Length: 278
Length: 315
Image 1 (tube, rainbow over the protein chains, first blue to last red):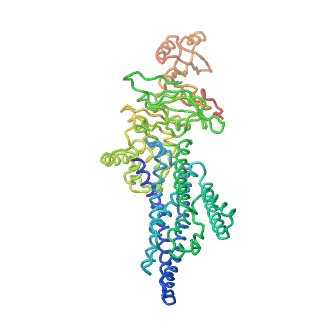
Image 2 (cartoon, rainbow over the protein chains, first blue to last red; image 1 turned 45 degrees about the vertical axis):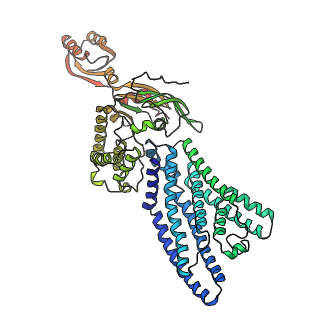
């Protein structure tokens, strides 16, 4: 019961503090620009390309570019909105009134996590759903495995949220933000090194990429999502026609690892929070 | 090993019991030995200089800080157990709350954390807002509240669950005289219905008016626990202004007390018992002295505080 009270409180906080609204208003602007741009390119594509397979390649590429940005924005939104969710309330003392109630500490962490996840899911599904819907509305194109792709993008929010929650139980707000973006940076560069390594068949580079993914699997999750949603041609070419997942497709095992990573991180956040003095 | 005695069947547990509670932060001792008992229905003052470990002690009672040693019970449950907090109200020192909530929303949130049924909330929350004088601000965001208003809404929050124990950490620091009187009235009301109040304050005049017993704490250690009534009665000083008193008659006053001092017409004497006052008056007149004044003076809590804690402020 307390978990849901706190979840609702966190969701309400995101809405009252204009986090959600600011993100959604800019999200609508993003979708509008995407729609106008997509429509211009569609007109050109219909004039110059008569081949249905070739035009669907163009549409898939544009849609994936749109989703790439949505993924990036969701990552930013996850870290920026939640970075002070715990450390901020500890520093200000707001947490004292909350935890002097008959509430267990794990209920506070889990409740907050659910509240933020509700907000982030809403954001992700409106933004990603918007890109997919605009694409379909203007071109009648939809990519394969949409739900798998969206599910993986959702997993990314859960993963990063758990990391900022763990950081928030032991670090100050600023240090937590630096840590989260620092890790994301490692994942990002690791992902590209792995892709180029795969392209040039350089095993060392591939290993560095995998190591980075083990440290933080967020970029690997995105590459798997983009692999799931890539066009038939890109799949037929072993992924080499997909610039978001150049040949080096993270395995199912990496996704299982990411799920376990998320659960472990959240579990550690609960444990650290339960053991610390407030 | 358990330090605290187990309860016999049918026995009501004290509101707070601690034995040798300790806490260190990074090797620096915050609380060295917190040993005290607060009975149900009593108002207990917790006094000490800044940095004496008062807030850390309160946080240990509420499970916000994990003790480094010793043992304690809150309403009969071990410290850290969330169950007794169902019947505990708490006003924290800095009263920082979710400022984007309105006053009424804030009270509803905390009522839900106490699992208070919706019907009871609807009846009780307006009553509490009325009591702390914030009815007309019910739908205003806490962001717009002054320090005193925040303290008032914090007090209302501490009373949502009809608590058996209320812990108030400096409850009047942001309040004007009207607000302080409100706090006194609330504390009296709580005592009348049998609730215990643990009052952490360095406003000694407040403590003097409201508390049954006081503990003095310094360097994280309880130095003394005194019943305020007996303490104040026991140490009574009487100041007299008397003319034409013979030296041997003056010496005869010593039989009623100690520290007999004379400075011209002014005589002071520390008494054991207030009942000696009429006897002294009769004696002085029988001795042919002219009595201009006979004024009993209770030892103020401030004098006592300085006597017990010292003037170094515990630093």
